[in-house]
Image 1 (cartoon, helix red, strand yellow):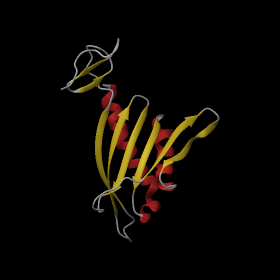
Image 2 (tube, helix red, strand yellow):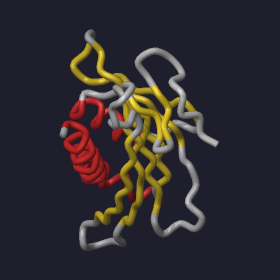
Image 3 (cartoon, helix red, strand yellow):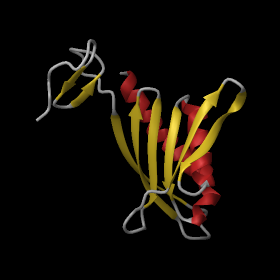
Length: 150
């Protein structure tokens, strides 16, 4: 059963999830799934699927190889803007250092002005298409941010 009583002043829990203020229906957590294909026409295409969880001030993004069965969570990297540097700072939080996840997290943190957590489980061939994959994810994130602004 879901508790529908307010848990603290200014916030409430409802059957549809957490909301930002009593009486408002704007959820604190927004989800979006996406798929994409990138390739150069010479080698095999890289097919990927992902999910974006948008929270207040940050995004949690998971990207996996669509052709892998079953998909597994990859290394988790985080990136955020810094007032001391033009480029966002990034670090691997869990798993082995994964440059694909770090580059995507930095790219999204800079373009969306959010703290980004990225879990990436893509084949090695995807490293040639990091920017294209990041742009695809940014488009999905941008559409989610646009929906939120309405």
